[in-house]
Image (tube, rainbow, N blue to C red; front, side, top):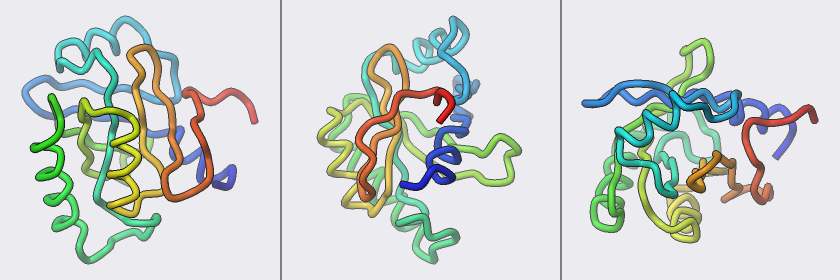
Length: 147
């Protein structure tokens, strides 16, 4: 994954818009407000943030909604808990419907590959990471430090 793409992922804001509303800015360290939000959402244990949208970074893929519905069906069967969340650019001009799901990290990686994603976000109970799926990346702790 090139530096530009890595920085784009790392600048994501996770916007929760359901019954409990709030956001987590992945450019900043986790604070009490963010931890409180995740607790209210019952997402204070490890979870993944996955999407079916834009496979391999292909914007406006014609089957985005169908793919997202398939992801939701998969996670409804497998996850202990899942919550709808949008992954947004800081200016909110780009928004990707996503799902935060309490599943094992190895299963999140398999699902990300199944839905042709380059990467996914992983919360380990303490901090967020960007985990490579379709692209070589490994695991990068967020927020990014200077590259």
